Length: 396
Image (cartoon, rainbow, N blue to C red):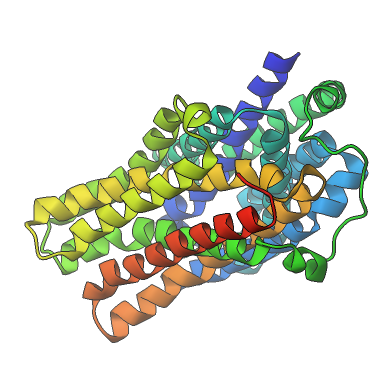
């Protein structure tokens, strides 16, 4: 039963990644078909992010009331319906409408699954699961490409992914007894599991927990580094470094390959090193990679620095999430992980556009400085988090 449920969760993490890169892969065709400017994609992503932030914050109440299994199944189903709604949309306003349940479903399942794994599974699984998210994010552009090349259009790409999500939602509903049985067994075996349910926490209560402001700042800073690097790396290499467009694009993709591959490799050592070392060493390695991009070294050093930055980023997000029950108590972990996801989505949503504005207003050469700033913030707040936890007797 343990292995079967874990396999289902792995599939669910692939499912989490599937929709995330669809709009990027399909938008060059979508905006022309819908008769809207290229920049209109920002409206869609903002609406999705808004729904995701709201549902992440509400995940504590939902999960306590309905359980992680049911929340995951319904959330995946909601996302599936929204994706199918995208596939039947003929006007831009319809995409805006469907973007709201799209984001609501994604945020709830993300928070619920991450907390469930943090409570009941070893650190290596958290790392590997997030690597599987990367697999899903890498697959969906190929699905969109297949739909476009086979004459199904961009709507066909969304329809394929929507149907895959419906299949997963059905599997999750059929396996709800496994979630309940696993929770009962593992709560009896683990001291980190909550002994009794507690009332859902309100935001002011969450912020008053020692260390929470630092961990939220860490998620915000990490997301700023990851998304800014992923979105703007190729533009920086081409414009500021004179790298050919094809090479710049391939090395930008290597950044994400570094994250995905790094998470897979980290899984083999995660239990031995522990979350604290993974966070510290990952942040340090990311800063080394950013330094290689920043320093006036040959272009090859900058290209290598981009890959090293991805490898450094790899363990940070999964390790901080996995450490949450130990850091703050299992009874509060769902509430805190929900707010952590919201902080991450805020960083993802607002920091890359801010850099785009700075690059257009000042210079693209600010790219490594911008990454360095958030990299230093990330390392600083994670160290402050550990100091606060040691002071409150919650040692990682």
